[in-house]
Image 1 (spheres, rainbow, N blue to C red):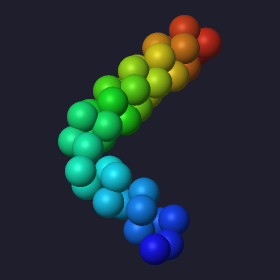
Image 2: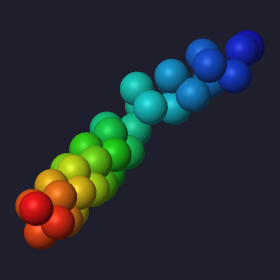
Image 3: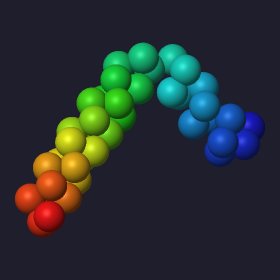
Length: 40
């Protein structure tokens, strides 16, 4: 079993993990956008 397949199965069986990634990504994007606006 390849590592990529293992990771894929892990993600597929863990919906909450995908939400953690989405929420973290959204917070990071908002943080970057706010900082970019402050610099202008």
